Image 1 (tube, rainbow, N blue to C red):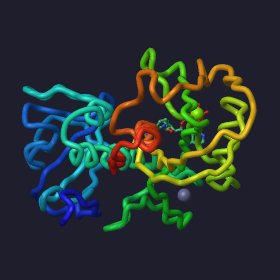
Image 2 (tube, helix red, strand yellow):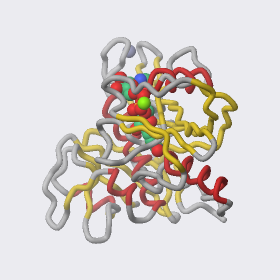
Image 3 (cartoon, rainbow, N blue to C red):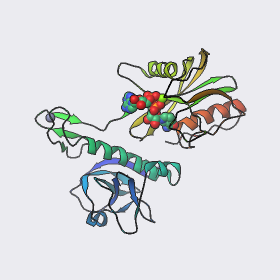
Image 4 (cartoon, rainbow, N blue to C red):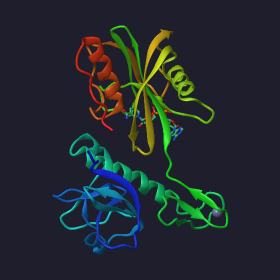
Length: 276
Ligand SMILES: NC(=O)C1=CN([C@@H]2O[C@H](COP(=O)(O)OP(=O)(O)OC[C@H]3O[C@@H](n4cnc5c(N)ncnc54)[C@H](O)[C@@H]3O)[C@@H](O)[C@H]2O)C=CC1
Ligand SMILES: [Mg+2]
Ligand SMILES: [Zn+2]
């Protein structure tokens, strides 16, 4: 089956296609959603920082207008990416997640990080270029490990002070230079709860465009230690029985998938599918 959405670097000099507009408050939206005829969108009073051709949705070329300010457009409102993740068409969320990552990269790479001069878009390549430095800057992706630690019928879940009240999730953290995925996982678990793990198993990955994480999801068995939550980062961490779980993360997140897989295996239920 051909996928509905494929990314591509499209020529912004060509006319036509659809476009999304992204500003400080998220994406512009009307009753038909966040995709507008591109020529119409470009006639609105918007301050465009950068324009990028980002791919094809159902065969139609899609462009991104990255804006400096959230303008008022009649009949339209602004909506953050998280709201698109939580509900609505998953393919549309994938388009917007990609657009958000390209948008923040375009915004943050207008100037060369080495010499400070203005950079230019390379034709038909997703890179910004500084000729004097011969430096290319590509979109930033941050590898992050996420792990469900289990002990028989119990799973270790924690909450960050940033979470919705009551919600507990799996442990996660960004890879540092010099680490393997496993090194990072073991370090993050030690830092966040002072627990040791063994039998680390990779389950799958997911793009998490908040703002540019690539989540690598694992299962690990508890190997020792008492839970000591990391000050400031972890508000609370506990062992929960699979029959008595607290409120869990959004169903489209890999955190939720890792929990659902383990619960399904433990209870002999059908395994869930990881949303891409
Ligand atoms: N999709 C999912 O189900 C979930 C995704 N996540 C994501 O995983 C990522 C990591 O989780 P956290 O516990 O927040 O990370 P963490 O445990 O490494 O702590 C966050 C801290 O890391 C530092 N940091 C921020 N960006 C960084 C980067 N690019 N590289 C290295 N260090 C950085 C900052 O000091 C920040 O306060 C986040 O993007 C988070 O949104 C977390 C839980 C569930
Ligand atoms: Mg963390
Ligand atoms: Zn330069």
